[in-house]
Length: 149
Length: 404
Image 1 (cartoon, rainbow over the protein chains, first blue to last red):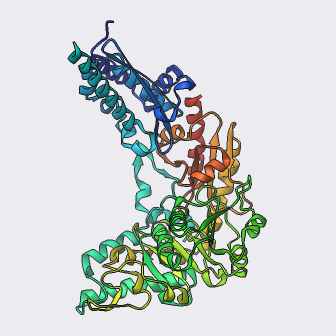
Image 2: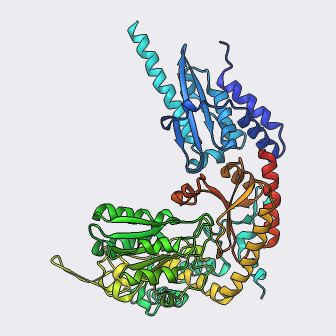
Image 3: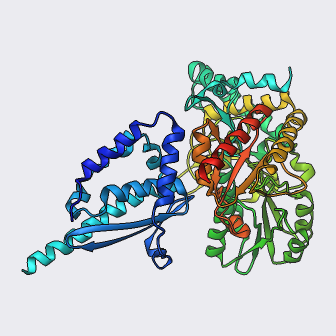
C-alpha cells in the first residue's frame, strides 16, 4: 500500500484551508467532510467504543493489519464528525510509531484548536488520545510478534 | 433612565467576538456585570483590603462594615426576617450541600423520603443522592408534563409522613418554568416536611419574599444576579439554623477553642468558617443595589417582551421545536432543531458572535424525560435588545442552511 506520510497529508489540509477566506467556507468544508464520512455500522456503536463528551458522542474503532492501524469513527454532531474525518485521513493506514509520533499541528494551523480545548463538550481530545492508545497497544502486539521470531 | 440605557453600564457588551458585536444570550449560566460591581471589586482591593471581623485597625473595620452591609442588603433582597438568617456561601450548589450535610445528616434517617422534581439541576439531585445513600433514605421525584410543568397532583400523592424534605427548583434553568412554590411549600408543611427552594434562576427575575413563601431554606448565586462569581446566599429559618450542626470547622465559626472542647459562634458566623470571599461579597452588594434601583418589575416587563418576541420569531423557523411551554416562564427559551445536533448550532452561532448555551444544562434526567440529548438555550437579561434577537434569528437561519 502506498500511503503518503502524515506530515504531507497535514500539509495538504493546511493548503486547502488557506484557500478559504471566510469562516463560512471553512465550516462548510468541515461539515461536508463530516457528511461524507462513511457511516459507522451500528454493530460498532457499543459503549466500549464510545468516547462520551458532555454534549456530543464519538465512537472510535481501530484495526491492525499488516503493521498498519486503520480507524473508523462517527459522531452524532456533524462538525465533530468533520474533524474526525480529517484525523482519520491523517492517521489511518499508518504504522503505530508514525501515529504515536504525530504532532497533529495542522489542527492549530487551520484554526480548529478551540474544538480541542472544549474537552468536556465534544470528546475530540479524548479521541486523539484513544487513537494514540490504540497505536501503542498495536505496537506492543507488533513487537511481541517480532520477539517470537 | 430607560431600561435600555442600562446596557451602557455593562462594559463587556461593547466587545467584539470573531469580528462581530457580541450577542450575549447565556445569562442563565452567568450574567454580565455592571460597572458598579466591577468598581466595587477594584475599590475594595485598592482602598480597604483587610481580613474581617477580627482586626481592630481602620482597614479591617471598613472591610467588616462593607461585608456586613451586603448581608443586610441580601436580607432585604429576599425578605428575610433576621439578618443572621443570611449565610454567605460560594453559590447555590454550596448552599444545597450545606443543608444536606448539616440539617440532612441530623434529620434524615432510614426509610425517610426526600422529594425533588424532574427538572432539577444536578446540584439539587446529587447532594440528596449522597445523603440518601448514607442514611438509607429514599429519593422521590415529581414528574414533569410535556409542557415542562410539574404535576402538582402527583407531587401531593408523593407526600406522606415519611417525607422529611422537599427540595425543588423555583425556576427551571433548562425550560424557564416558574414552579408554584407556595403551593408546594404549603403542602409539604402539612405533612411536617421542610422545604428548600433552589433560587439560582429565580432570584434575578422574580420578587423573592422568603417569609411570604414560607420556605425553610432558599439558596441563590451572586453571579446570576449581576454580581461576582464565588459568592452566594443561603437563607434558612433562624430556629432551623440554630439547631443544625456546623458545616465546616475553622476560624470565624468559633467562640472559644480548647483542646477538650470548642464552643461555636452564633449565627450567621457558625456556618462561615475561615476567611470568607470578602471582595466578591462586598461587590455583591453593588449588584443587589443595582437590581433594586432598576426595579424587578421594570426588568421583568422588558424581559417578558424579549421572551414573547423571541418565542414568536423562533416558532416561525421550520423544524424548530421549543422545549418548555409552561404557562409561567422567565425570559429563557430552550429549543431543538430537527436533524441537527445542538452542539453544531452552538459552534456556528459562536462564529457569528452569538453566545447561547447548548447541551443538557446539567439536567440530564430532564433531557431524558424529553428524549433529547440536549437543547439550544437562549436566556435574556435586562440589557438584551430586540435587535439581538433579530441577529439570533438571522444567525440561526444561516446556521440551519449551512448544516442541511
